[in-house]
Length: 169
Image (cartoon, rainbow, N blue to C red; front, side):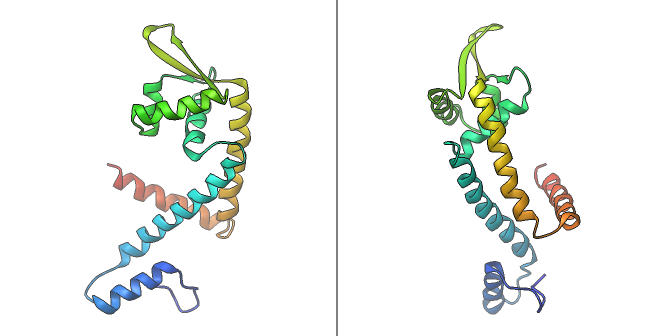
C-alpha cells in the first residue's frame, strides 16, 4: 500500500518507511490505513472544534445539542438516554448539561412520566444555535472532502462503512 512515486508523501509514509528499515518482516498495510484514519480524525476534530468555538460551544457540547436536535420535536431526552447515545459517564454528561443550561441552550425539568427522572430539552436559543453550528461543521467537512471529488468521497464513505461494521461487532 505504499505511496506510488507520483503521490506526495505524508507522515504515515515516513513511519512505514522507518518500520521497513528496522523490521522488513512486518506487513504494515494495516498501519497505513489506521494511522491515516487516526491522524485524519485528530486533524478534523481540531477543525470542528474551531468551527464550533465561534458559537461558544465545544465539540462535546455540540454533540449534546445535536443529539437533542436529531431527536425531533419536542427536542427532549432523558440524561440517561443522552449519556448512552454519546457514550459518556453520567458525571461527564452532568458537566456538559450544567454549562449548556447556564448558557440557556437547554433546560432540565422533571419528567412528567417518572417523578424521579429528568428531561433535557433544547431551548429556542439552543435550537437556533445548533442549526447554525451544524451547518458550519458540515461546511468544514465538505471543504475537506472536496479534495477527493464527489465520486471518490462516496467510495470512501462506503469503504469506511464496511470497515466500521466489521470492527464494531
